[in-house]
Length: 550
Image 1 (cartoon, one colour):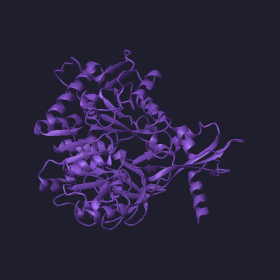
Image 2 (cartoon, rainbow, N blue to C red; image 1 turned 90 degrees about the horizontal axis):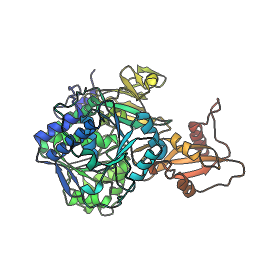
Image 3 (tube, one colour; image 1 turned 180 degrees about the vertical axis):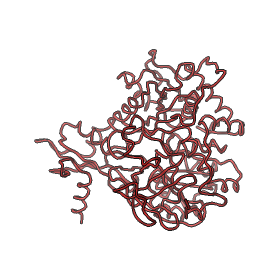
């Protein structure tokens, strides 16, 4: 295959270059040998070297092995951004276990589904007051058998931790968990195609599906970006200071910050959350050089009234992912700072990489960029995913590569819905121009991308249906100036029920679904539209609203 976009690639990079893969734990071990004394992670102004990080990972892996939490075992990580995440992520994988990420942003319905579907009976969490009580609820409900509690204060001064909690036998502190563990003479034999991570993604309807991401998939994703940035890194010839304010339980931060930057020997400046003042301090005072963000972060930064007077001169590279970046946001940022903000496209199922823009060269506003080395994307007909469309015609993006999942956990019988041979049907609608640049014009309508997070209408609808006054409900996405999109609920009420406000609805839903899933608006309608077979139809609702607006 000849790819016309290759002529826009960075110097010496070829589209068909071989992509290397390794075990996830080997990626860190190699870096620890090469960059032993370099700082790998900075958290609360404390630095952890590559040697120390690797030693802590080996300690965790030893404890997992000793306790029988190794091969064919799924470990749930219910953690925010803290060094406890990489230690347990790499440690469990070194022991041969697989990981399922549990987002602290998720609600009860989603979290219980991820635990039961993945088979995770052990959860690693933190003693933060915002997380631990929820993990304890899973134990009390019989959803899990054991909790390992990492003590947040181990990483320096902290707030919002639980000073005391239930000390029953099923709950153990991380210190107790690793105490006295002796390293084995030989580590378990792990294959490249063994599942390393079950990363749940909802598609467009129903409960989330676990994308099976192998060691090969995850490390190939890192290698793809390594090939792409090779000439840039040679010219820089420096260890970068990389801001990580994105959540490590998200695939974007996991592969394109944590794994990639540890592979390069860079310093990851780990933030528990995006705090505008702290991020600007990292740039202006600590001289951060790389900042990958999501559109909401760039919107907040471009909103600084004195941005054109702030010192961002240390930044060598900035990027945006997770959701479409508004063209005007990128333009304002470049106008005020002189720094070009690059964006791309990817999915959970691709371990993030898909397309991107080169750091220098032509700028194509509105494009999602060029397909990365080792990845093949084509455009196929809506009604026949075997039929490849010519340049310029709009269809569904189809992708294959060493970074692409082989399927969904326990969903083998549905494989034909998403795969044509080894090519994954993305559900995104777009086209490729004659120069190899890709453009998205639409996507499967139901999915809402709010602040970089996937929001699934059906999950919100299920929670709203528990309201005693609700007869029927449909949730669709609406434009949101800050988040890009937000959820709006359209409700029909039971006879005699009174209307309620959005604040009342959000209060009712809090805890049932994640904060990022809470609707931004609610409207009441006498009758919701249906398909010709009687099913409630979001598309018909959108069409109806569009017609009214016109």
